[in-house]
Image (cartoon, rainbow, N blue to C red; front, side, top):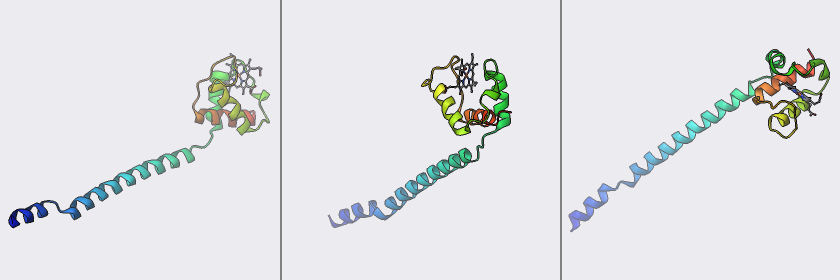
Length: 114
Ligand code: HEC
């Protein structure tokens, strides 16, 4: 009887099991944080590229728009207007399919007007 009890006790070493679980949790949190930080860093470094916007505008928008018509407008306001078109909130002659980065590029180019 006594021997059996001792055996049962030594089978479950709470210390080891707990440490392993915590270590696994910590490493998972660590991996997740690195992924989030990496994405944030990537998004933060994605500057609006007016040259890329110019190419996009010539490709898609110049069929109906003159860039000069948008010159002098606030780039952020323009980006908001374009995003509303992309989201379907503003009625627009042509449905636009653009990523946020492409919208920022276009807005930077259009606001500059050249
Ligand atoms: C098929 C023709 C056509 C194409 C292509 C086109 N647009 Fe337009 N867009 C229009 C018309 C028509 C209007 C509304 C009247 C106007 O401003 O002349 C308009 C209006 C807009 C407006 C003002 C919306 C508001 O808030 O009132 C923006 C911004 C705009 N377009 C951006 C773009 C961008 C960026 C592209 C290219 C990615 C593009 N458009 C491509 C026809 C077009």
